[in-house]
Image (cartoon, rainbow, N blue to C red):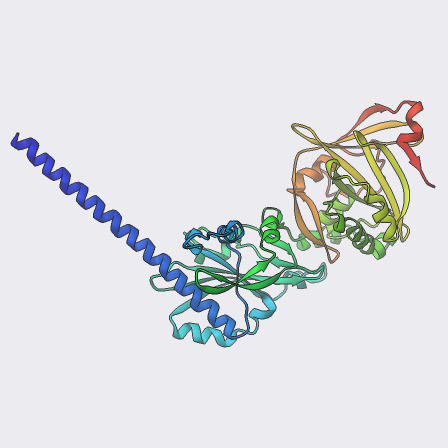
Length: 428
């Protein structure tokens, strides 16, 4: 009995010690959460005083604000993890040199990450000055803040850099929301909003900003790789090099207002991936659209911005495609069908009604900057390229037959002659 009593007493002591430990841990993390809110308030207020709006981009906080209706949670900022991610526009941040001294006096440390400025990159210039892209902001006793610098790119969109492993050691041990990849966003404004008793800027509209996050990944063209290819394969100027970018801009003007996503495909995608430009000995541009995103508004939209319709082939259920022309350049608009394990699109020979099928591995899409235009590409891109052009995709091939040269093409039957009038509609 004495032994049992001693054991019982020790058990009570263990329970008390455990409870006290948990209380201390809870107090420690609650205190750190409280301090990060103080740090956020001080940092944002100081920046605002200097005319630099700092806006919240932490997804969990934005989601709470978006879903909060009449009854807001008592602490919205508490929904964030170890780090609260914030954003600032590069043009505004350039004004903040004197801020660093003020932050230093307050014991606030800004650890800076830099990267080459992509706005200056080109085939002629692959070594460019660096710009600040990310900051880890710390103060004793507080969890850190993560500041992401957004820069305006040519095609009127916001871009932020990725946290490259070699440059992100200061973030080691912290789970950050932004930085796993570079990102591109439609232009947005920011609006001042009361959050947990402090005034903070938020992207506006919040819902649209959140909706872009999962599909914001951005990949820069490999200019150094392109230089290597072009040094071995000198290119001549051609019509597509002169007017191809304008054709793509017109395509965006037609499809973007309809909310229809499209991406570069076939030779246009190869040109971006291999040489950061158009393949000069091609005469057309290729894009793809998911068949489920087809709209009857596509044809009038293309005509409205100055395209001429060349043909419509196939059916909505099989091998549907359209082709247009402007500035002497043809653009093929292929519609993509999804199966369980692969994607495919079709082609039709207008002379004999034969059908062809092109098979691709499934992929997502990412953003890139091509000829000063923000466009989507298959992502990852190399499996798409090798599916269409094989392992020798990096070799210049000037003779190409769309019916049989592609590595992923296969015959797909013949349209019955009685259907030709509906499945092969040509206007030239």
